[in-house]
Image (tube, rainbow, N blue to C red):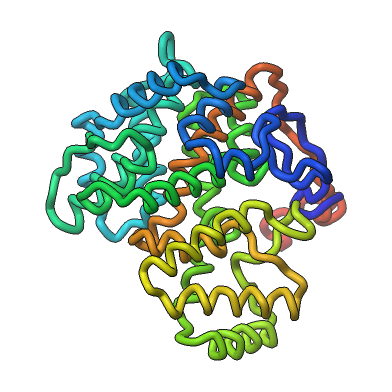
Length: 368
């Protein structure tokens, strides 16, 4: 038995390698370093969903396709308006995904590829429509001139086109979060798919899994940690006190990686650039000190969530939107796994070690 299935091989995938010596993190054979430096999220989504990188004609058409999938049905807008403004944004996406599945169900001409593209286009629209309706009473148009998913997200959130560096950082973040083998939410999607359930059910379940603070919600917790300190020295004292209390420090270590998360190095470079651009003298230095303390005291390295938290903050993204950004990206990986599971499906049904009482006789109510 292995608690949390740690170290257990639960299936096969051609989508990504995670933590394999000599490979690191790759998407269909391409290193995350090369993809984050040279590709765009649209190219990565195409790669994950269709197996190869697109040529220029395919990429241009794919961008147009995604741009055309940003509009929301009026019925869905009504539902989004009824979701309380106090709801967690992940609950909004979970409900929006499930509702869209009723309005645009999977069927002939609406297979997983088409539905994945639809959700890549529609997820940012769902969240931002709900956000603006409940914060400003606005019913926004979810179309925009942005030619990228990254630009679409930032344009809808801020009501203006993003700067070039902001759009690029968002694009890189989407690439880094797109796929990660059999993580908790992806495995959930595959379990649901293995029952021969529909695409939307698998994605809705994955969103619910990602909501947890030990998975997608870690970036929110990481920012809450670094934002509480005003100086690096204060951060060191605070983290040392947390360690003495044996508190869990979010954003450090990883179940699969043993020495480093390759995604962290990529996003840290961009977080440093954004910090310099905005004249930050607090959050990034605090982050560096927290990292140093965790390496020194616990020999733990930062994972993707740690420096992405400050990067997202510098992009002007509300903390509660950090995990939804994960959804906007990971839908590409989830959908690719749904497709892969269906190609060679077997119901996922593990067994369990029973640790309950030994067989015992039933006692009538009068004898209890």
